[in-house]
Length: 166
Image 1 (cartoon, rainbow, N blue to C red):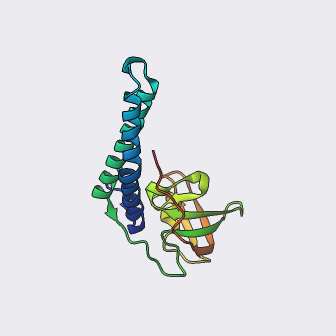
Image 2 (spheres, one colour):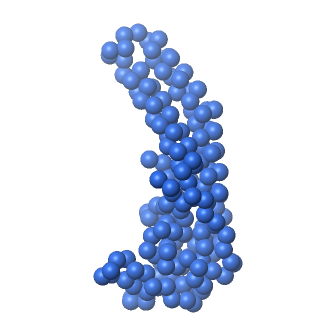
Image 3 (cartoon, rainbow, N blue to C red):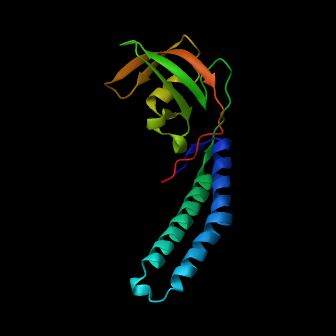
């Protein structure tokens, strides 16, 4: 696995694990107990649904614990005038002049629908460390590449993004 995570990512995962263990797990166990008490388990949908939810919660806890255990911690600090982790960046595509704004995050928080791109994506790699006005060469593969110009860098608050749930 060895995902690259920031200290902030680890803290969010630990908080989710604690919530799942202290709040969700007891509720799930109570739901299973109540459903079991309703009688015949062979036709008891509530029992199977409660068991499934309990198992999904336990699976999520194990997944997060494994992610934390195998994670490679990366530094999320950067100079104020250069692109770094958790910065919102506006770029202009040199080819057509169009602009796009996105935030650079780690792989567990990436979500292209919300313009959260990973630091390991071609665009993320290319713009990291660049300053406003600099050109970044984005190499998608051996045959495809393009250039973008950094227009604006914003240091954004990291508190609102959730760890992607599977």
